[in-house]
Image (cartoon, rainbow over all chains, first blue to last red; front, side):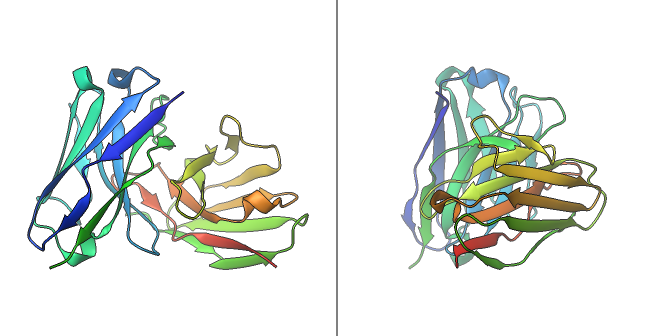
Length: 121
Length: 108
């Protein structure tokens, strides 16, 4: 069974930083590209970042470019999102999601349960 | 950036009836559209990809149609567990991957 488990969220002051982790199981993690997506309270889904299986290609949304940094450790079956320069508008549930295995088809076939970041003084 | 626009924002339907949700892309995305279901307090779940292919384990009452810029998700006979928020997503022209704003399907 495919499982993605996020951790690392919490309450942080404006300007602060956190490192989110997503640990995968039930599939060969090193074969898959991964994404981070967030959802502000009561709002829709916002894509944040993408990383290929080898970390060779990385993309960011304009809204987080320069503040967020995605990485992965295939030996630990984990993908990470370092978030810094946090603002109130970054308050959201952060999900990791697996990209489908089909080349050229970048839909998200499995999602974690999410971890909440609350930015407040 | 491709903008995905869903309509209506909220749809009220009685159990057992058919629900039709729409999604429009601001540019041609061919058939590279996925649909997700999200229940309160849960992560999104993939329902449909490539506009019309049901994901593993998704009941046959869910169907997707469309190509180009107009897409539809139909739930043929609503069950109580189907009342949720539904999102479309395009993956033809990215980054960024873009989602619609969601349609809330509620019990009438």
